[in-house]
Image: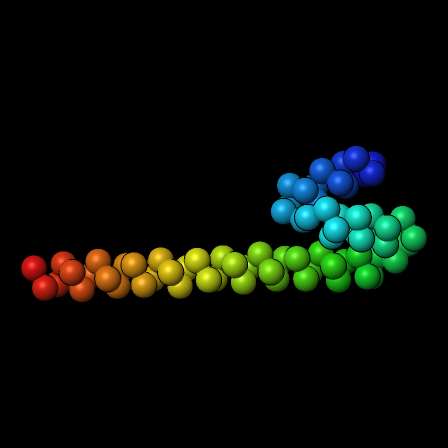
Length: 71
């Protein structure tokens, strides 16, 4: 994968400029274990955000359920 392709893939995955630069530097230096750890950390952050949004949806669903039940 070329540097441009890696950079674009990181941006597509929602990595910011700082994380992208850090990853590219680690990757260029052959520090693949550290680069993978950075990706894993970003993945966890994204997943935590999804779970937070799911909790909000469940709250809304419960609210609608309670409103319909009392009608």
